[in-house]
Length: 113
Length: 113
Image (cartoon, helix red, strand yellow):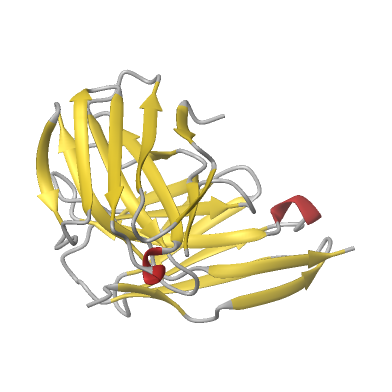
């Protein structure tokens, strides 16, 4: 069955707002998590990752938060822009296990001007 | 661009046709993957190759036949497909099986009539 999922299939925000996309995972043994962005007509593209020894990691305009207690992952996008409109996927695996990533369903983010 | 190319980008085929999807990566990676992406479903891993050897077949029907002649090229041969096989087929590569980040191609949009 699916190990990783997202709370909401769609999210609509105004340009300039902050966006928060959530993901729940069920495998407590997972120790690596990654967020992908998929724009229309393109394949998924890496955004940011985090390992289980961290609670927070920041990139350019994006922050990933990991709450291992409740097995929850979130992606925060600051000052959301129209170019951020895409489907966002979280994925998990157990590092060094040599197994492939398990993906969630995805959240479609729509940014209006 | 991610360094992973896929051809064709779009394919329409009848149920009795035989066609092949091609993937090429220019990243020097050793692991390559085929995924199926259907609407409103998570990415489904189909096949994994590591150093040209198949390491995972995720219970994929035999009407899908992968081929990996070298670490840079991956094919997916299709024959007697069903309409429910219509989907976006994504190829990805990673440095090796232990590398978490996978680089995706743009996908082939397949329609089976």
